[in-house]
Image (cartoon, rainbow, N blue to C red; front, side):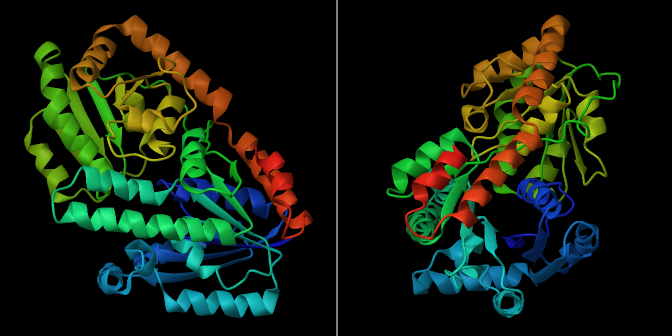
Length: 408
């Protein structure tokens, strides 16, 4: 089957939130299908990643989009009434490329990852189109609004309203809708009525993210992520301000490492604290995870599955998390991860893990076991295959109940 796969960034290497599921899906689909990837890019530098992706797919078409273009389009959209995050990515070069390739190749299926990329497949209602929301981005803007001051809170609330209306339109016009988690499915069913939604989750590379048995550094705490992403910035600033002082009052040797590329000024400023290290970009996060005693997924703004959390758990690293990040998992509280929104309880959990080697070891064992049980990519890809089979075999109308049975 000939498949067009549309996504936000060049889906290689699989080293950040959206690239991880898109790469794994594309690699899986390309084993049995002819896959053509269409994407934007984080500037021209992202185009360097195309060569690594080409070994898996038939073709890659990418149109880089600059930060300046994104900002100018978003400003124009304020007056036009469009969702800012959709208008910001409205790259004419990618529109033209997809239309040209569609006429030339006549794909049998189009898969779009992330609703702000749906605009590039809106022209093709004659073929089945699967919309992978992953999570509802409108609810992310709602979270931003709740944690911002005027006038940003107004702007984010406006984007939430506009984007939800767009998500509803897309969900009704595309053939099928997919999300990553049970929590996202509940939110979808509450906010977007009359559209069946399936569930295809994230996974983790259990062979790659496996502890090498490195010696643990006493008192070591770690966070990983792209450090110009607002939820990650909020996470580490909150931890350093509200949690770490209480931890160090009991465990003076406690040290926090922030591991991730592109740290913004607010993150770099945390390195002034003697008990904090900001690494910037690293070639491999696994040594940092392997040497740490505790992982803190301190995200107060979070939707869907946090890949960083799955990777830490897969490394056998016990985790402490607010409910926002934990709710995206299928993991019971206490099975490798403890979740709380109370700063004092959060600090107490970190302290207990740092001080109690036996509990730490048991939580690490549970962490690895739960990821092996629930987050194998093979299981998620089998569900995706079922959804695709239903999508291409059923008529465009009247097929919702049939495909939904496959997606459950």
